[in-house]
Image 1: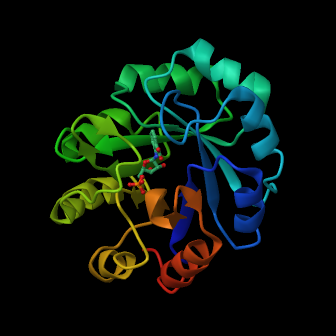
Image 2 (image 1 turned 30 degrees about the vertical axis):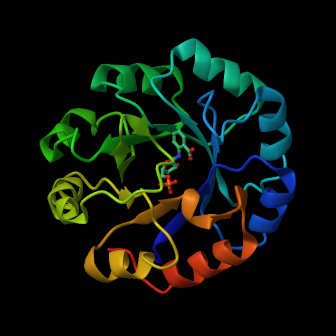
Length: 217
Ligand SMILES: O=C(O)c1ccccc1N[C@@H]1O[C@H](COP(=O)(O)O)[C@@H](O)[C@H]1O
């Protein structure tokens, strides 16, 4: 199977329409408020309605309450929640229990989270995503983390058959370097497919071409 690709942070219907003509695996929306790629409830409904069921629809939240998740699901259903904060295993367990049909990605911020912590989450999540933090900002940093940390996370994910994805400053000019060196299940990109604060169809096409040449392990 080829390596999967998620493109994240869409805010504009035209950008979504241009993206979904490509074989993306997942498309993400920033439901966290007061971030530069945040979507309102009104725009979330209109954006997600454009996405075909063949593409997984992901809602990105940071330390959400159950009520907050419910309030987004009341607007439009989505397939996966990406927990991009400091959610504990207990919080992931609670979310998994309340939303049994929801797939759950837990984000680990490299430098803050250690590989052995994965063990406490495996019962409640079905994907681990590694990202960077920059001066306390979580998500959408456009910055790489220290990729030499990837193998230790990969080893523990393999033990628990948990797919490992990588985010953080992935661009068309560094994604091949990442995939040449490390065996991962998927890549998640936001800043790297933008030009002048809009998603760019050429960058998305180029990213797909570069990612889909590789087989996942
Ligand atoms: O994209 C954002 O602005 C964002 C905001 C809040 C939480 C997550 C966010 N995006 C996620 O961040 C990573 C990497 O983004 P980048 O490629 O470094 O810009 C990715 O997982 C996005 O889903």
